[in-house]
Length: 474
Picture 1 (cartoon, rainbow, N blue to C red):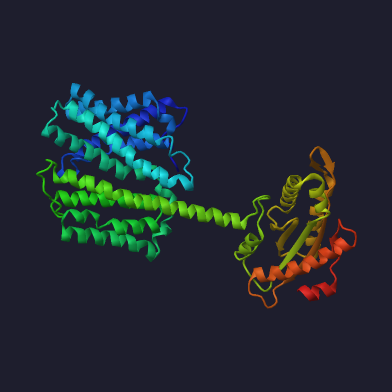
Picture 2: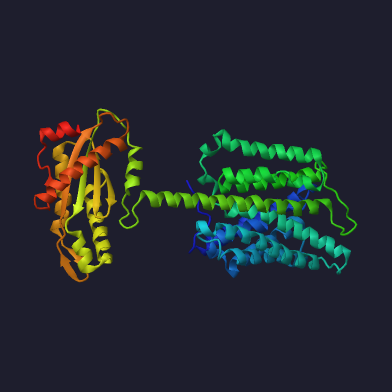
C-alpha cells in the first residue's frame, strides 16, 4: 500500500507533514554532530529541497515558513537555543530556496534527451545554495572577515555542498521501489558493487589525496550497468563510507594546510562531492540511451500512423506466442479497394486519415482475439490462433462490413470505402516457430486476396474451405 505524504489541495496535511519531516531530520542532524565523522553531515536541507522539487505545489512562502518554524522549534527545545535559532536557521532556508529555485522548473517530467542537462544542473544548484548558506551562516556567527571566517565558511559550505550533492540525486531519481529485485540477481549486476567495495579497500590501504578517487571507475561501472535509483544510492553510501574512513584515519588524505586553514575532514567532503558528480552524469546518460533505444524499438514494432503493430512488430510478437505442432493459426489479409483514387482525389493527408479510421475499425472488431498489423501501404494483416475456418471467415466478414456500413468522412464528403480480404489457415509443417508459419500463411492469404480482387472486390476469399487449400496450407 502506497502512502501519499502530500496532496496538492490539502494545505493542512501538507503543512503538518512538512513540519514533522523537517523536525525529525533536524533532530537526526543535530545528533549526527556528536560523532566526528558525521559532524558536518546535515541532511535536512537536501531532503526538504528534494521533497519540494518532487512536489512543486509545495514551492510556496507558507511551506518555507513551516520548515523554518520546525527548525527553530528543534533548536529551541532540543538544543537550548533561543534567538540564535532564528538567524542560524535562516541559512538553511537560504540553501533550500536557492536549490529549489534552480531545479524545480527543470526536473519536472524529464525526457530522455534532457536528463543529462538536468543532472548537470544539480551541481550548480548545490554549489550556489551551499555558498549562500555558508555566507549567511558564517556571518550569523559574528565572525570577522579573517582566517576564522574562512574556516567557518568552509565548514558550512562543505557540509551543505557534499551532503546535498550526494542526497539530491537519490531524492530526485525514480523511487527505488521501481527497481525490480531481480536486477541484482545476475552476477553482472553484482560485479560493479563488488568493485566499489574493493576500490574503497585499496584506496584506504594506499592513502593520499588521490585515494578518494579510487572508487570512481567502479562507480561509473555501476552507472553503466545499474538503474539510476540504485546508482544514486551506491554513490551516497560510498561517499558516506569515505568520510567515515577519513575521519577515523583509515584513509589518510592529509595534505599541506599552509595555504588555507581547512581541516582534512572538510577537504574530504569537498573531494567526495566532486567524485559523486561524474558517475551521476554517466548514470543519467546511460538511462537516456536506454530510453532512446526503448523508443526506437517501439517505433520499429509499431506503425506510427495507425498505432498498430508494424510488420517487424508482428513477427516479434509471434516469437512470444506459445508454439505447438498441434496448434493452428489463421491469417486474414486485407487490402483497401481503389485506395490510390482516394490519394489522387483528396490528397495523401486524407488517405492517411482513412487508414487511421480503418485501423480503428479493425481493432474494434478484432479486440483481444488476435493480432492486428499494418503490413504495408494499405494492406493489413490479422492473425488468430486456435480457430476454425468458419470463425476466421466470420471475423473477416465482420471487419469488411464494419468498413461498408459506415461511410468515411473525407474533407466534408462522405465516401464509401470497401476492402478485399483473403484467408489462410493451417498448422506448422517443417517450421519450428510461429514467424515462419505465419509467413507461409500470409503468402497463401495474399493469393486468396488476389482472387477477391479479380472477382469484383469487396469480398472475402475463400468463402468456404476447399480441401485443396487445406492440403496446400495445413
